[in-house]
Image (cartoon, rainbow over all chains, first blue to last red; front, side, top):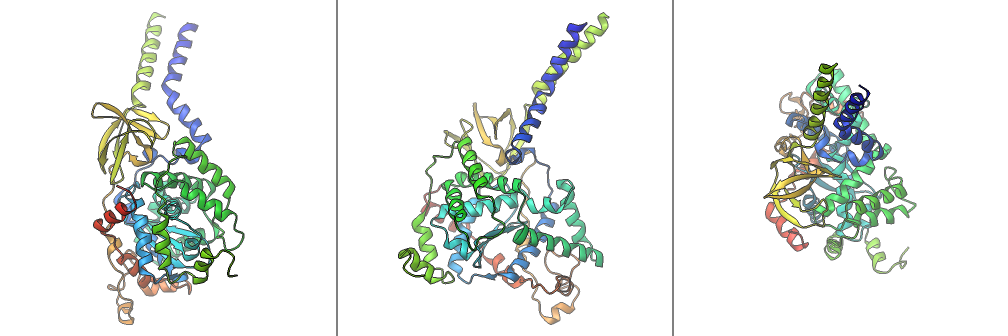
Length: 296
Length: 163
C-alpha cells in the first residue's frame, strides 16, 4: 500500500511539475515571465478602442503642456525609426505615432494607444539612430504591455482596467466625466511625475532590446544611452531612475538572449544628418558637438 | 484492496498522460506583421523562414522565452513575445478620424462637438473638467495626419541596411 501511495505522489508531482516550475520561475524573474505574450490575458477590439480613446485624451494633454516641434523633417524621421520598430511589435492593431516635443528635460513618454513622445533635449544627448531606437522601443514596450491601463486598475486584474475605462467613456453623466478626468489626471501624473513601477521599467527595457534586435538595430543603443544619461546630473526627467539596476538588467537580458555581441545598425551618419536639420534644437549644442567645451 | 490499487494505478497513469500533453502543446498565433523562425532559440541562429501576422501554429513546448514549433519538417523557434493565444486584433479606425474643429459654433452643438473617441463628452465639458489645464487637440490632429507610406518605410529601411 505504501508503495502505491509513493507511486501516486510521484505521478501527481509529474503532472503538476510544469505549473510548479512555472510558478517558481515567475517569482524569480517576474519581469522576464511577464514579457511573454503567450501567457497573457486576451483583449478584444473594443478594449483597444477604449484604450485608444483614453490615450488620445492623455496625448492631447501632453501636447497642451509641451510645444510640438515645428520641424516636419525631424518628425518624419523619428516616425520612420519608430515605425521600423513597430513592424516587429506584438500589437499590430495600433497605429503608433512618434512625436518630437520641445522641452529641456531629457525624457520620453508614451500614452496608451500608441502616442510616443521624445523631447528635443533627449535627442540632443543621442549620438546615433540605435540609441533613438532603444528609447522609442522602451516606450513602445510600455504601450504594448498596457502598463498605464493596468496601473490605473489599481488593485484589479488586467481585464477590469480596460472595462473600467470603457465604463467611464460610455457614460455622459457628471460622475462619469469626473471619473474620466481623474483617470486622465492620474495617467498624466504617472507619465510626467511619478513614473512607472520598477517591474514595468525592467519589462520595457527587456522588451526594448529584443525589439531593437528584431528590427535590425544594435541592441546596445539603449545601454549606451542609459549609461550616458546616468552620468548627467541636471535636466534628467524624474521618471528615469535606477540607472545602475536597469543597466545590469539589460546586460543580463542581452547575454541570456545571445544578443550582447550583436553588431547591428547604428546609423550614426543618418541620425546626425537628421539632427542637423532640426531648427528647434539649440544651435549652440550643435556647435558644442563639433568643438567640445568651446562654448559654455 | 485490489480494486483500490487498480484505481490508483489508473489515476497515476492518467495524471502522467495529462502532464505530457496538456502543458506541452498549445495553439498560438503570430502577432507582428512578419516573424522569423529560427533553428535554435536564439536571434543569432539560422533563419528557417518567415511567417506573417495571424499565422497559426501548435507549439510543441517552450525553451526559455521561446516557443517551439514544427516548420516544414524541422524544429523551429519563435520568440514568445511575438506569439499569443488569440489572433492579432484588427486595425482601429477611430484613431485616424480628425477631431472636430473647435469653433464657438461647433462647441454649441451637442452632436458635432463630440470629439472623436470621447463618447458623450462635448468639448465644453472636457475643457471644464480639465480644471484649466489646456489640451491641444489641434496639435494632436497634426500628429495623426503624419502618415508613413509603405514605400517610404521600405526605402528608409533599405537605406539603413535593413531588409
